[in-house]
Amino acid sequence: MNKNSTEEVNKITLYNTLGKEKQTFTPITPNKVGMYHCGPTVYDYPHIGNLRSYVFADTLRRVFEFSGYEVNQVINITDIGHLSSDADEGEDKMTKAILREEKPMTLISMREIADHYYSAFRDAQKDLNMISATTYPFASDHINEDIEMINTLLAKDVGYKTSRGIYFDTSKKSDYGKLGQAEGDESRIGEDSEKRNYKDFAIWKFDDKLGYETPFGRGFPGWHIECSAMSSKYLGDSFDIHTGGVDHIPVHHNNEIAQSESAHDGAPLANYWMHNAFLIFDGGKMAKSSGTFITIDSLKEKGIDPLAYRYWLLTARYSTAISFSYDALEDAGRAYGKLVDSVTSILRKVKTTAGAESESEISKNYRNNLLNFVNDDLDTPKAIALLWSLLKEIEIEDGEKINLIESFDKVLGLKILEKAEEQKKKEERLEEDLPEEVRELIEEREKARLEKDWGQADLLRIKINELGYKVEDTGADSKPRISRV
Image (cartoon, rainbow, N blue to C red; front, side, top):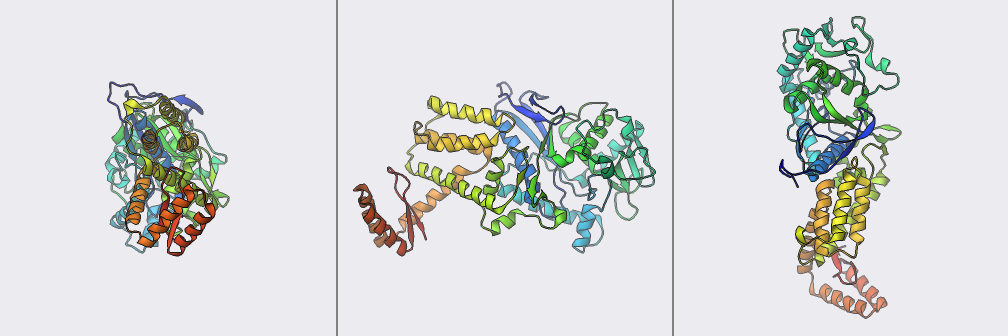
């Protein structure tokens, strides 16, 4: 539904962490939006808590495209320089992965590990039906951009050197921390007697054993500088939207803002900052450090469709924390399955789909309501409730319903129509191959149902079941659905 630059796009409101209020979105370039999403640190398999951030990012992109915007979407890949805390403390995550997998302590090993887990991340994105980002820049491919930005900060005297690395002087940024701080933030930053201020953070970490050679010393870029350098390269010094998890607000995102705006003469890094809430697991956020994280493959092994997980996430607002349980996910799986079954039933009846120019007023109302809900800070719970209402709507022709469902699919990314078409084809193949005895019993049962002889219909259903087939009624005016037991 992309529109060209001469067409008007729809109004979208977003909750902006910078300002702490819902604001009407105004793009830097008309009808276009540039968005940057803090990507995964590829030292292990992505867990479903991580993936909530990217389902949110994908939904955001879909909403903009559904409203007529052209989207430039960047998801960075952190394959160097991310310590186990968001500040300057702990073990480097990529180094930890090298030790865990017993590889040589080299940059080549680091990239091999990164490539492997990046591939796993992309597989998870496909399982969750995410649209591929415009760009997936690797941090290790942008060392020159890091060096250039660090040199700029040094030249402006907002960067300074210690024995441990190059640090950003937060006292030089009067509005440092404007996104907000967490309680106990002082303890997260860590202690270093050489730092000018306790909140100062590393933009380059020295390492005389492993790292990249630079004019200011061998080592690795700070995690924060990587994002600033890559976002600037692919989206410009200022761009529209920056997203991430709420845990990024107090340190990572505040640090990105400070160094980017200092390097670019005060130009805002991003105009809108959006953050998704945690997936709560066993009383706390799901994290790889706990060793108990759940992957998409874990769900598949339990027979749970990854799209049921996406459906479950969308039943809550992206900004609302939700508690994970397999019971909740299995309930979502059943609901998702019913959606697919309902659309399959419509497909089995429909002869043709009506063109957009012949859309009825009630269909237009559904389409407008969908747009209004998702454009109101991504209110996907209301959009899903609207979808259920559509499926029960008796005043819309089946062909029009299919067109509307396609629109819901575009913005929610649930592949309902695609799954229903697959299911319909599977049922048709099964019906073609039915044994004659089963076919005759089904015909007898349909006759009994028409005559309202429910007892006989039930007996025939049992006989069909004993022959290895299951028959399900899908409505008075529809053929029954046949499947194997």
